[in-house]
Length: 135
Image (cartoon, rainbow, N blue to C red; front, top):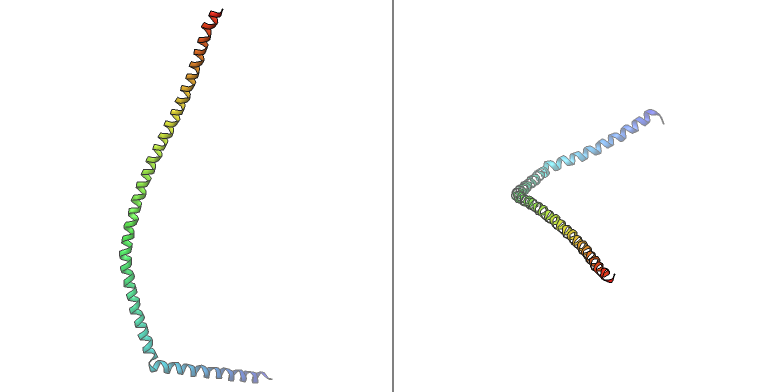
């Protein structure tokens, strides 16, 4: 097969492809001309109206809900601050209780030691006169 014959066959194939595409385009243009374009415009108009309705509902919802949520957040912050203060007070009371218990334990131990020393001193004082009389 020669190059010229191959080029001619390729040109014929491309021309047939162009004819097929032209026929498809003509059908599409006739559909637009017959009213498909008006249907598309009506559908777009309907979609636009729905979108506006949804946007206005969203705007109203966001306007009321955001304000309400902002108030709730502010109340929550106030509660957080109040709870933080209460925790600080509870911590300091706990520290005072722990130090009071530690002091009471230390005094009890010191009292027990003093009582034990007093008992020993008394016992040794009792033994001293008894040993003197025996002597």
